[in-house]
Length: 322
Image 1 (cartoon, rainbow, N blue to C red):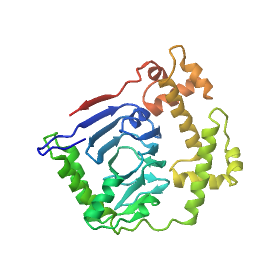
Image 2: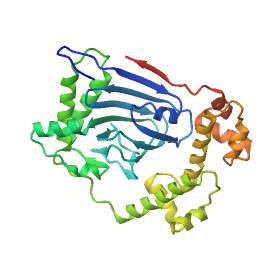
Image 3: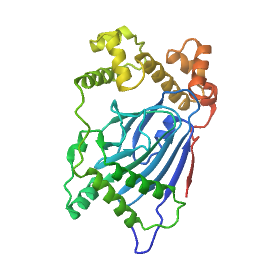
Image 4: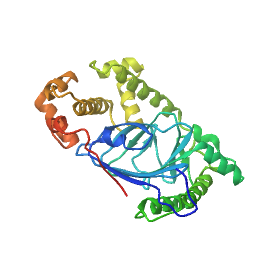
């Protein structure tokens, strides 16, 4: 997008979705998949503005989620929730006065609570380095490995104020380059001489490895029955350690993880079903043999009957451009 000497209004896109995985696809140029963790009908809203070297957005999600994310290459993402309680990045809980931070082209995982809001900024790395050089700032490169960063509370409040004003305005004309430079200044202050979170305890590393091994195994054995005993044998840990690992990293038990993973996969299958497929066929394929119980659990989790998901159009997203 190019700027002109006169003021111009970048395109602000507002998108709403009533399915978690569909909502995950609405963020421009991201690769994402969302699993819904808490029961109830999902609602998500995304407000997004694209500037010449920045992507700025605010995301609202009504239900608790496990998110698998990857932002575009040659970029840096900063995630700034106004309230951090209950959120985790790569299994690490976010504390007050911390922000999330991940380089582009790398997979990362978020666990977010119900009624969660987050501001996101993605900056192209050449623009970031160019701005740092012009202002004589040496960037702290530890953001490449540390998913959380401590932030000066004054800097954090100032950056949140800028994001709220930019995304909350009613699309009156703004000078793109000016607003981008203002945001870049805030980002540089945040990334200059800031220390990452304290070193993680050894227990975190081991528990994260246990959870990652289970997730990999589940992804590689989509159609096979999986027992707790098999997972303990796979990870060479006791049932108690397996339990501690999941509650520490994801905030849910291993059994909840397996159940919710299957339910979310059934939902994706129902939304992508061929016209000839039935709820019974899809549910039994994924191991839900008691169809009455399945229908009850599905409606409790997603706020609608599986037959409604099967019959509705996959284009259930409403979008507007302000």
